[in-house]
Amino acid sequence: MSLRALLVLVPFLSLAMPSAAQGLPDFTDIVEKQGPAVVNISTTAPARGAGGVPQAPPNLREDDPFYEFFRRFIPNPGGPREFQSNSLGSGFIISADGHILTNAHVIEGAEEITVKLTDKREFKAKVIGTDRRTDIALIKIDASSLPVVKFGDPGRLKVGEWVLAIGSPFGFENTVTAGIVSGKGRSLPQETLVPFIQTDVAVNPGNSGGPLFNLRGEVVGINSQIYSRTGGFMGLSFAIPIDVANEIAQQLRTVGRVSRGRIGVVIQPVTKELVESFGLQKPMGALVSSVEKGGPAEKAGVEAGDIILRFDGKPVASNEDLPRLVGATRPGTKATLQVWRNKAARELQVVVAEQSEETRTAQGGPQAPRRGKPDATPTPPAQTASRHGLTVSEPTAAQREQLKVTSGVLVDDVQGAAARAGIRRGDVILAINSQDVKAVEQFSQLMGQIEKGRTIALLVRRGGNSLYIPLKIE
Image 1 (cartoon, rainbow, N blue to C red):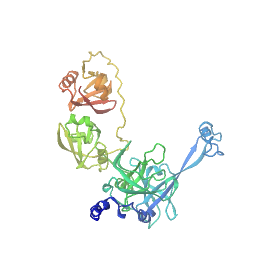
Image 2: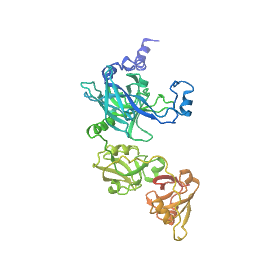
Image 3: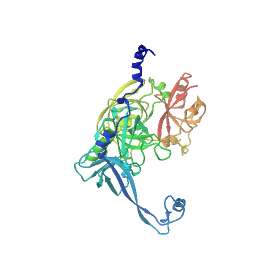
Image 4: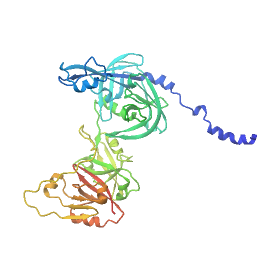
């Protein structure tokens, strides 16, 4: 190869060959400086085995093949006995006077909490407060001049960025593992208030409550959960963003409880099938399927069928965003809602109320309602109609009372595309797109006006819940 050819190739070779600066990161400095602020947490909880309840004989070890047999099937003739159960987890110091952040599930049910520092000192900790909804706990030890972590900004994290975890997996204290950010803003089942950071950092039992660091040595999350079929690490771990955790900790520290906002709506995703029905360009926002009577949203003028696009100036990209934004808003705050109604955006003012401990977002598929008993007095036969695989009738007065509806038509039979869309016998159709359905004749007229190939949104009452179901007219 000529010298000229080599000179031409040099720039390309330098691009293909990584420099020292492009190699794997060195985590030693982070571990040395931030590691002392990470603690090991062990708990002791009392438990009592009732008389006659199966117990393992004391002379059998847990790895003995007969241990599980005796524990499950052989009663304990000795009657009640007390024993101690120990739990291991992690945490990190956030103030020099001994405040420590960890997971709520690490200390749940604990009678005694022991915190062990990297210098081998041990302290008994007291609980300042816990929040099970976000799995955050704030505890305190009686100490001073302790090393503390630095907080980072989870909003600046990028997918693919290196992160580091320090914790006590299986009791191995101050274990360091590293990986990358695999995703941001993840939602997990039954978790509507936390936009989890997903990583591939090795996290195992005992890592819970420990910090997740970025390369600047700042805590960006609290390692909280893993997805696993075996109980061990399988490449999917999830951390609570530190800004969420810090907000909870501040409330626990100042008032001892967490106050969350609510506006009184039941929402569902805006799917690609529903986009056409509501005249949107793409799936976005949170679709309101029902509004709490007398709640803040109803007072603000929110209606079923509205799509909430922004809350207090912040975009609602999907229905999962709204509970987080509203929940993080202080009760009493006057916020602006941008809603999409009748193919146009409008703004409404809502005063956020406080969420009670009992308030929960409905999860899972509601059950189809049962038919009501016939009226005590004779009633004329209900009108019926059949359109596009749906046979409907007008509910009797007793059925309306049981189903808690004042309008709509009852689905008596469902076939074809309607059945495939998920509509069930016993559903009550309350609206077609944004048009309320009040009678069978009106339902038949509205369905007859829809062109073949179009997709409509049916507002369906099922059990105690309402939801929009997209139906393509064939």
